[in-house]
Image (cartoon, rainbow, N blue to C red; front, side, top):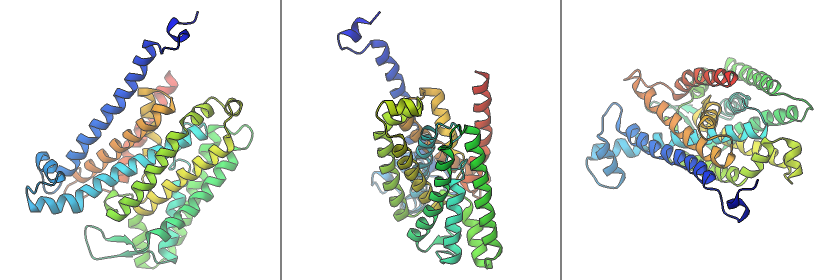
Length: 359
């Protein structure tokens, strides 16, 4: 029997309440992210009261020493963590939908390692990386655009292999994961090969650079990453209905008028581009794009209208929290954030898999 509210064109109150809960979760996540953002800026070797952080951000000169620490060190690092978390998460959720593979992410499918290999090629053969005598930022990228282009080329090579495998009739998620493992091993071996023939300076630059760390980005690099990640998020949100259709199956999506091959190609290309840029500037940061979409699915479901923005918020929260803890856990030493995300991401994802199978 058709509900009277549906029949006369009005939306049922139960559905509105159901949707309202999803929006409330996303809004709560944004508020939590802002709170963590202030805390991340306030903690460190020099403790800054949260009130002073807010006043400094609003242009009130509370303490000139705080100004230098906040604007030159902690603010760009915190913003980079948020942007990188958003970029990796939105790339992960798009890949999982496009490939219909719950284990899809730039890290598990080998795209991050492909980008790392491309960046290593740029550092060693094109001389785009160097060591400098500053403790805060010992490794710099002389020409980030060449490095990004090199990383992007190899990301696209890995993406092309994945797309070809995905077109094989009957390719299962397990096959996709095994393909990602093979690609990761291949590009890791390639990076090790380059390191073996590199000079001492080049070897130190590549090894240190491969440790994913959000503290390396300066304001100009942060601006470039922000623009690209924002445009990618807009693209994925505009295609949210296409991804919902693909989640129902390729034949169903085609029956609804979705050009599955085109959507898949564009989505994987943009995901590879985000991964290439983040890897070129920050190094390899794993598990964020894999874990965050699954955490959000447990809360607000599979609908891409809410899953995409929810994953973006969760990615920012996870990577910002990881970066903050990495600065404090072995103080005065600072761990690269990729170390902590690996320690956090692996057990969380195993727990999600076990819980899923139990259901």
